[in-house]
Structure formats: structure tokens, C-alpha cells
Image 1 (tube, rainbow, N blue to C red):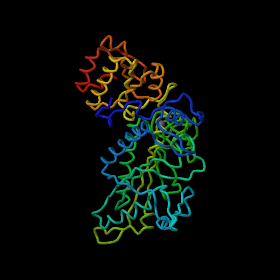
Image 2: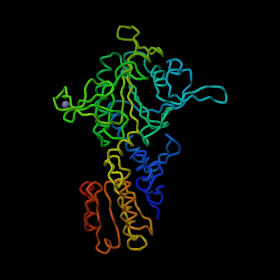
Image 3: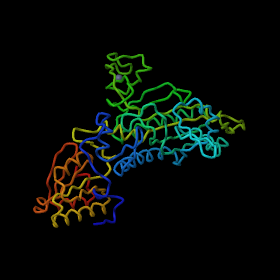
Image 4: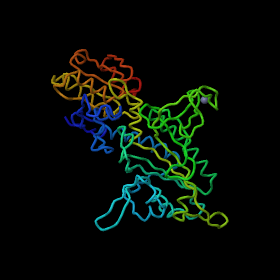
Length: 431
Ligand SMILES: [Zn+2]
């Protein structure tokens, strides 16, 4: 039965979901195992994944959270290309120095870089728009795929050769103006990660291969992480173990509590670029006194697919993924049992379409001849916060069963009461 709300909601059998009990490389990592078994992603080769419809919806949610917060910050979205002419990378000296670059040769003899990062495009672009102090500050961002020729792609979608990334660049008239903006981005990033269900730790790191000055990393504490940090559980103090002078058991320099080491996944990284790229591309502006001055730049990254992997590493149990509410692919998972029964079929489809009309997105398991056990284990694996069950039993009693994915608690309520609640925009109260 087709519905007019397909973009908002989906039928299970039309969403490219074929859940599996096992993955071939189960030991690789939790996110690899659960995201593949739940049909969020499909591995094509080491470090290369297709994002399937369920995964696409989660990634859309992540990207929209990022958009919401960055737009509030006054940044504007655009799309930077993935194919960059070689000469731009020669101009920054990075054609030869960045060892993870994919270099592509055209049949016409031209050479290109597959975007590993985008300063080489962003800086000349900004030059078109920055002439005087009146044009500053400027900030824009792009969410698209990046490419890095990693020696070892691993940990599911945590470290890939092709991956989703948000890059933001900001341009300023002075180091002071830059510093103010940088601080605002730092706070904004914490909100973005909180919305994604991650209580991030901020560590200060040395410049690294793309930068000249100090940087800040945002770390999600997880056993799947490649980094090790030393941090305080009581306050926000955290340092990367590589640069830190502190050891486990030392007193926190901020609050005096004990420090401990944790494994962590880097989910965001922000950089003070200084005038490195402004110099490379001669990006200058005329100040109030009519003097030419260099533009100060910042760069701010979030790995979007990596963030999805990190969220799974943190939010799961023995039955599958437990998505934080704002990232869940659908608001609820409607499970129809005994769908061969015409009464059940009618009640379930009516409910499905009603929810969609009320802008509550639904994944509707409408499959016939699939056992209840299989449907429930699929729902657990996929991890949508609220499960609604319509079955022969509930239809006989004019009721509906509501289950919370986190607590596993179930409640049976009259169907008309459920409709009343939805009608009063009271979906929240069902949790
Ligand atoms: Zn502390």
C-alpha cells in the first residue's frame, strides 16, 4: 500500500534492510559490526563504504544539527569541490608534503588532488570576496566527502579513505577578532556534540601537518579510540597523552581530583591557521587607514561519518544500537505482527499514515510471514528509541503496545488514547 508520505516514513521492505546476525569481520569494531548488521552502511573495500538509506537518515540528522548551529554562528553553507587542480596545492607547498594525498592524472595530462582538506580552494575563493575591512569577518562551510590515502583504514567508519566531513573556514581582520570567533566555535562544537549524544572532551594539540599554530581536538571517550587522553572526571580538564606532562593518578591542575587515562576518538578539530594560507595566495585587505594587511584564518572540521561511528561506539547494548533521540533514523519503529490478518493490516497501515500526516517519522515493519522474534531483534539492532506494536492481540483489545528501546519497558494503552495524544502533539509524552 503506497503512502503519500514516503519521504518522511518508510516501509521496512522498501528501505534496503536485510539484517544479519553476523558480519564476516565481527571483531573489527562495534560500529562496523552493528552498522553493517543493521544495514546502515555497506563495506565496498577497506576504508570505503556505501551509506545505505538508514545510515543516510542518521547522517542527515548529524549534518542538520551541524547546519543549525553553524548558521546560528553566522556562517554560510556552500559546496567546495572534491577535485582540486594541482597548481593550487603547489602554491601552498602541500603537493609534496602531505603524504595522504590521492593524486589523480587525467587522460588529458592534467593532474588533480582529491580533496583531503580544502584550504587550497577556500582561500582563493575568499580572495574574491574580501577587499576591505568591511568584508570581514567572513565564514563559510562545506559538507562533502574527503579522501585520504591512509596506510591502514580501520575501526569501521572511524578511519576511512573516503569519508564525510564538514569544513568551515573563517577570515578575520585581526588576531583578536579571530580569537573571539574561535572561542565561539569551541562552544558551538560542544553543543553540536551534545546534540549528538556525546559529552566531548577538549584537548589542546600541536599543529600537525595542516597547520602552523596550536589546535584544539574534540574527543569522544571510547575504547574504540586511537588516541589516548589524560582527563579529569570532575571538570573539563583534558590533554592528549602525547603532549601531556601529567600521568594517571596525578592531581587535576584545575580542581585537584585524580586524573585518569582514557582511549578516545577524535571527532572534531579546530585550527588557528594564522596567515599561512593568506600569504600563499596573497589574500590581503585594505584596513581603515588604507593599508594592505594579511587576513587571519581559522579552519574547523568535523568528520560526519566518523561522528556517526563514534556515536555507535558509545550508544549500544548487547542487542544493538541505541540511537540518541536526535540522531535516530525515524521517530518510531512501528512493528506489525500477524500482518497476514486483514484487520491487523488495516489498523497498522491506518496508524502508519496517520503518524506521517502528523510529521512523526516511522519505519514500518509491514513484512508478512516474518516471526515476531525476528522483527523484535531487528528493531533492537536498528535502535530507534520508540517501538509501537500492532498485533492480533492488540487489535482485539483496541490497544497498542509502546516499548522504550533504552529501558526495554513496555506499556499497553487504548488505541484511541494513543491517537488523542498524537493529535494533541503529545508524542513526547509517550516516552
Ligand atoms: Zn579536574
